Length: 436
Image (cartoon, rainbow, N blue to C red):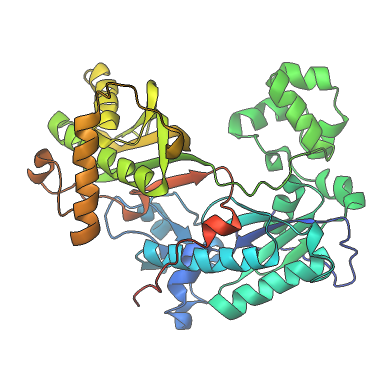
């Protein structure tokens, strides 16, 4: 597997036959850091870390010079600065990331209608139908890279293969700013030398279980007996890993937008055991999640509470509702009930609210007596006031008691994607250029 610092970068020769590699995985290089450096090109060759100013901040992103010191996202900023004392810390600007993400996704949409968005900075493209208009998959990949650079000044890496799994691996090997094509006939030769950790679904525990049994590479997995593999990691996981190791991945590029979850979380400046503060934060986050759901036209059925304690241990608890909702009050009641049921616990470092099992809000049916009708009208009114006077101009009274706790801006909200918006959906909302 390629290192995150680009030291094992591998790219294809221009003469490679890409005719069978019709699935592209396009990944923007060190996206958040690269966007911040658009305004600071004079320091692009220096180690740069994107993180909030809080003493409790974690790293949102790091450019490639910083990664050579071992700095990576999600580690504490204090640890990153010990690894790389000369790193330059830049604050994140999420409105800029959304703006540039949409510009890049519009480029993808121009190339093919079959775009599966994985998140803010990567997507799968099925380019089988682009041959007559643009050329081979390698030609399409080169066009995408050129347009992204010319229209946004950002760089991206492209992996081209006959399956999604191999295409994603290839884009990682091509980083930064490269393209790696894996023809269908070369799939196993590319896969088999890689470590088992390169397989989707292999985390630390599964990797340890496999290596204990002498399975160190993807080739070892491919040549192992399926039954023995299933006894080691479970029937479903064993089958999936065996298929991937043998180049079997029947999944197609899916352009439908299906978000898996919408959530908010915050890391406190100081660990807290104040139950009232935690409840107010749960209310604030529940309302924020509800606004994001209503804005996107989604409702959700499963409410999740996340707590991280002072010792960094993390607890998650969830509850599934009888009916899907997009109401902050309903989300809050459930997540508070989960929290209160935990009883006494240690000092809390991070708290978060997430809603899962999403579906289109248009599909929601209300009974003859809607017990949430009053709250629905109240939150509709809040949305209308916010749309006219700005977000936060009307809030629940309990949130006026104190300002929201300061925390890491990069951890304050999250949307996870399962697939990408259609071309039509992506074009309905235009973002304004971010303020410099």
